[in-house]
Image 1 (cartoon, one colour):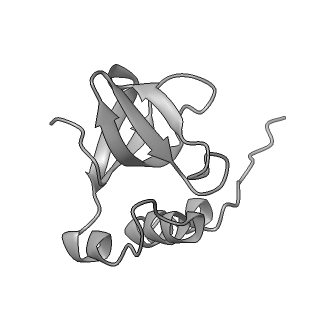
Image 2 (image 1 turned 180 degrees about the horizontal axis):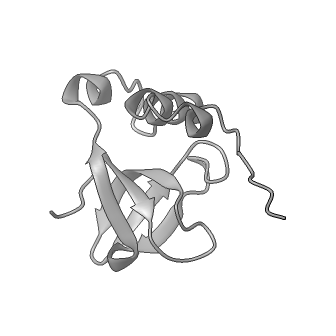
Length: 101
C-alpha cells in the first residue's frame, strides 16, 4: 500500500515511534506529517516513507470538511481522535503505566 495525502500512519522508527500522524503530502521519498499537538501544522515533520506504517485513510467527506489549504491543528486532532475512537486512552492523550515489582 502506497502512502498518500489523507492517510493516517504510525511512525515505525525514531523518537516518535508508535505515534499516529496525518499525511499532508508526499514529497518523493518523504511524507509531510502532522498530529496537531507535538507536530503542528505550522511546523510539520518530514519523515522517510520506509519509517511509516499505513493505518488507514481519512474518509473523503471528512477531508472535504477541511476549510483551508492547510488544516487547523484542532481539525487534525479531531480527525485522529475520531478515526481511532475505539482506542480511548490514546484519543484522550492519556497514558497508562504498569508498575512491575
